[in-house]
Length: 240
Image 1 (cartoon, rainbow, N blue to C red):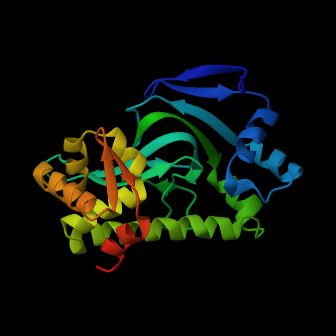
Image 2 (image 1 turned 90 degrees about the vertical axis):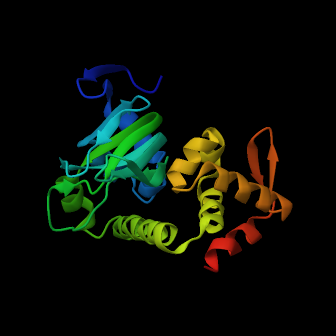
């Protein structure tokens, strides 16, 4: 077991994993973002990190909530979504392991405001890092700056994909894009759940899947979709 003991957090049955710093260093080393750091830099960073476990269906952050940490998903799956005025959930995108969770709109504030709701879709391990200290020790010293900017650009790209999905894509392009980006999740969900995420009718989803299968872009085996021609699948939404 990587961690020696844990203490409970009252919110969402979270466990804060308490361990010697070398265990936190092992966690940091498992993330691609921190690969450029040497051992002394990792040790310094570990001094203001907290590792937590979140159970499935926990709410990590609500829209508008403030945090003084940047967070990375070590393992598991998170979902980013908003609520409309009728309390309907609007799916935005998923966050997979080895990615930054936090959404940053500025580098000038010590407090990060969550722009959307973030929930946990699978039991997850998350590492929280004090943003103020991280920025002073690494970003201001031009260490990890490129990685940090790449994460921010990735969030911007996701926003562009959301705009395309909601305002530009037709139903076929929506399904093709979701299969290209979230195939594993699609196969875990019921068809009705997927149609809700895509904001299309279940009958429309079924019709598009049959069309993609007929075109030999996908195959369906016991309700599991397999992409057999990813290039043609990408062409469907990239050309829109």
